[in-house]
Image (cartoon, rainbow, N blue to C red; front, side):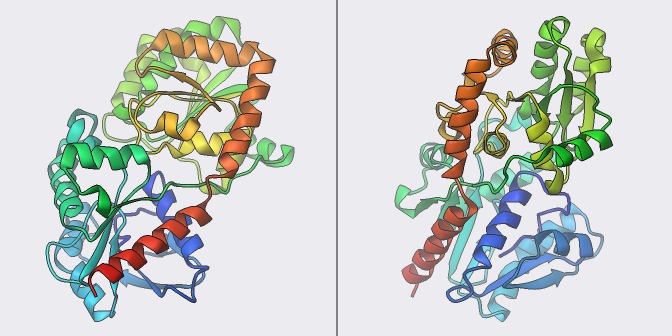
Length: 371
């Protein structure tokens, strides 16, 4: 498995890889896993799990270009030397040549191709092409949702018979009062709060959440907490705070939240808002539901597939609808209770064990198809 693209501070794809590895590591009787990671203690430690052989990759400079050069030119050779039967690229990429005859790639979403304006230009230039090439030449393509699988067929023309849907999961559960108090205390949160979590980037559409909060701020005592690393285009969040300066003092930019703190942060929130324009999966929605937090999200991409009837759904970009949904969650206890119960039940069926089972089956199909 080539996991060199996964940074120590995990978000999105990083959480997917770490939790998948932990679940796959329990299948040592049928899988011998060798993990290629950057040779830094933080990178290796963030993905360590029982049953894994960690192989640190040393490249000059420790920057994106060096990492990409290794993946494109040397990952296949490393897999051959290791005697691997299957090479899995977990982040859109496969090597240009060489390596095992069976190659598997994970595609999270196609927005690099369908909506390049939501991404950094340099990232689009490389990853858009790398994803297209990898999806078309892989032995098997793993998709994190049925929505992404359909996009692969419709947009890139991938044979549906070569696609495996391996939905993500969660192992989060509601945190206890002491855990919630410890995490909110570290963040300086003394009262009720609404939560938004995700990388601060255009696709997550956090300016709409700030504007929606401004619409109802006079009616509620809450703080709006935005948790996530700054990404490309995060200046739009600062612009939204300036445009809604009357409530800027009640918006807390919490930065990246470690995995160990996420359950407490979700549990302590009165509502979770995820106004993303489009998601290949939308893991924070599932995590919030698992923690018993009522959710409002959008109809963008796979979000209805994940949320089902356990969240309030609005159209992406509809600020008034977002404000109205948040107002409803705070004002209607019966609605909250219904969504919390549905959310916990729904989240219970989306597990990392199932993701690992489906992934292992895809590895077996990939290996069998080239022998």
